[in-house]
Amino acid sequence: MSIKVLLLWSTYLSIGVVTAQSIDSYSPPPASLVSLGHIASRLKDCQEVNATQFTKLNVRFICKLASGELYFDSGLELDDDGDTTTAFPTDWRSQWPHQTSTAYRTSSSPLNPMIVSYIVLPGAGASHAKPFYSVHGIAKGDGAIVVWKGHIVPAVFGDVGPQNQLGEASLHTIVQLDPTWVPFTRDSHNKNILRTSNAAYPSAEVLTIVFPGTSQGPVLRDVKGLYKVVLNRFATLRDSK
Image (cartoon, rainbow, N blue to C red; front, side, top):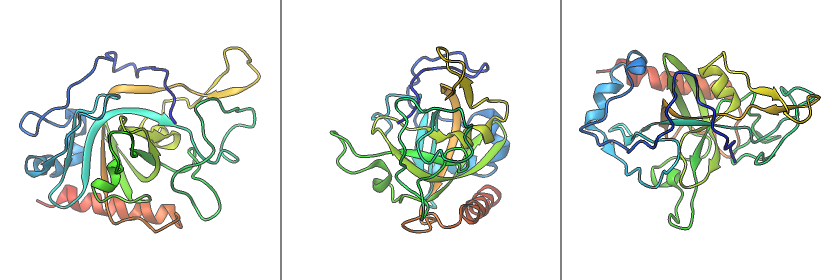
């Protein structure tokens, strides 16, 4: 699924495991409070979700808001799965564990990770027969908002990952969150080809809010339309007391 080599953003140097916090002790990261608006106060009345199944990426808190949205605070890891026929450099070459498919797609192809901002949610597994997203009323294609340090990025739930990992997102999502990040680097053994930059930020405190019921159906028909819907939903949630 996602790249496993850990390279921290310079502002996050610790890769220690963080224990998920309770609803009484959790506070959103200060750098994102302005972006959250009134959502921050709504967290005190949300339904806390058990985070013990997530052993990677330092999931700090998960809850379901009274209005039905799923909120989580986690680290971030990239996912470059999907259609790479466009928007990728011609000298780019895939490497394990890249996959050419995504769990959600357009009518003609898998999602392109350099064009579409998508998030990844955990699937089923040996200890969880029902996918995490289904348990919380979320369907493939539902929209989401990803927040980090004042950056607000609309996205789509576009791929399914391991049951023990929460906090993956496409290349395009990460570039939108941090425009200084370089998504491709030269292969260390062959300078003639590019690889996806290895990246995982386990302590990044990235906030994701998923909006159930916003999927466009079996396929993604209009990504910009979906982004507009979730941005409006987010604005309403943020601005309403």
